[in-house]
Length: 124
Image (cartoon, rainbow, N blue to C red; front, side, top):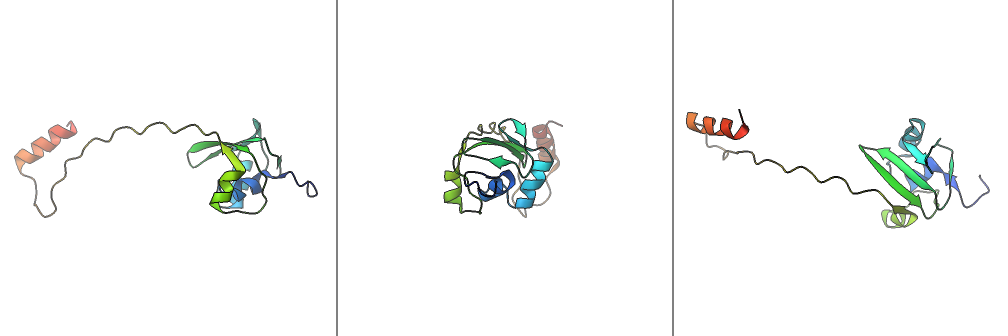
């Protein structure tokens, strides 16, 4: 693998294209089974080539990327996005946030009537 210019270690590549912050985090993710290359569980030293699909479960979401360019050194963000094609599905839409009643700062404690209205609003 050292002489082959078209491959790189999967942990190094994930770190190089800025999918994770450090190479040790990438290696730990590989050891924990959170990285798959072409559907197979990847060890940190597994080689990746252009055209390989890399799935990374990290920080509560799954990233699905296809390797378009192999890099071994960490590159800047504009160059990093050119090194892969992101096939990650869009995250589900956020649930609508319910409006919470707020009092103006310094308005004092709520009156009994205002407390009843707040409790009714909160469903208590």
